[in-house]
Length: 113
Image (cartoon, rainbow, N blue to C red; front, top):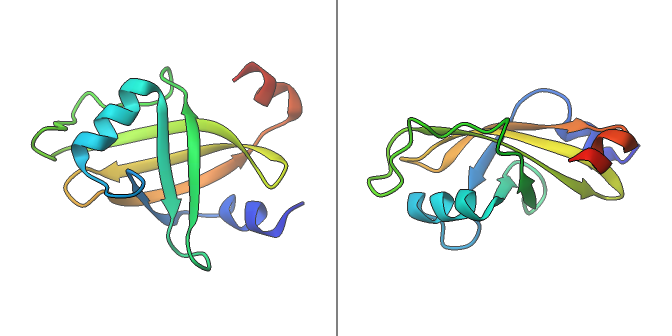
C-alpha cells in the first residue's frame, strides 16, 4: 500500500477547497461541473486532488456560494499513486477549510464510480 494513501485514509486531516485562487463561488462552480479540487494541507507541500464528484453522496443544500456561507459535504473518486480512492471532505465556505479523509476502494467500486 502506498504510504501517502494509507496515512490519508486513517483519521481526519485538514483540507481546503477550490484549487488555485479559491473562493466559495469557485467551489460552487466546481460542484456544478461535478469535478472538485481538494487539498490535504498537512502533507509535505500539500496534496492537491481533483475528484470526480459523486452527486448522490455529496450535500450542499445549506450552502450560499455567492455570500460564502454554509458548509458542503463533498465525496468524489480518483486514483492516487495507482490506488483507487474516495475523497470525503466537509468544507466551511467562509474559510474554505475543513476536514477530510480518503477511503481506499476495491477495484470493482472504483469502476462503478
